[in-house]
Amino acid sequence: MSTIRPPEASLISQESHAQFSKVDPITGCTYYLYPNVKLGKNAIIYQNVILGFPPRGKKIGELALVIGDNAVIRPFTTIYAGNIIGDEFQTGHCVTIREGNQIGNRVTIGTNAVLECNNKFGDDITFHTLSCAGNATIESNAFVGPHVIMLDDPHPICPRYKECKGGPIVKSYARIGGNVTLLPGVVVGRDCLIGGGSTVTRDIPDHAVAAGNPARVLGTVQDQKCYPGFYEKPYDWLNGANL
Image (cartoon, rainbow, N blue to C red; front, side, top):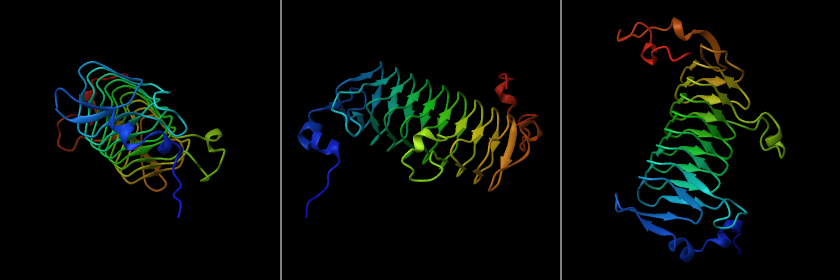
């Protein structure tokens, strides 16, 4: 019985993959650096990382991968060609980043997280463990908790979904709790707080606290209390960051 192989499989044999192996001078780990990867200064790369893997239908080195200074990329992470990533980027273990992503400075992607194609991330973002996004926009200083799913196709698998709503938009300083699902095209407003386990089916206004399935607005961030009493309000430590 014949085996159907994806187009990129015919381009990358085991032997050609091996020729791109490098040894990181700091960690001593072997990783794979494909052609046309622009890796900034002081990068720390761990075991079996793959940088610049060609997307389906693209030749080796056809698309560039740009990663800024001071990156820390942990074991078994694969970052495809066709991405632009800023300074002080960090991953956990086993992260996958597909092509077409634009990622700002000081972004952390957690263990086993997946960035599908065409996401736009601002600066100072945490995208936590086991979360997944495609065609999403996440503005600067947002926090995305573990196991958050950001969907981009309202009627899978529509052949024209890329022309439709697109992925969610998470505004700056928004915080998404663990195990939240964001449906295609929803906007989570600036300085919002989304409770864990929620399903967001419609836009959430700025400064709102929302939770439930479907998520409903329950109050505002300023209504919340810091239960240990460390701060008068839970986010006072932001020092009035023009929220």
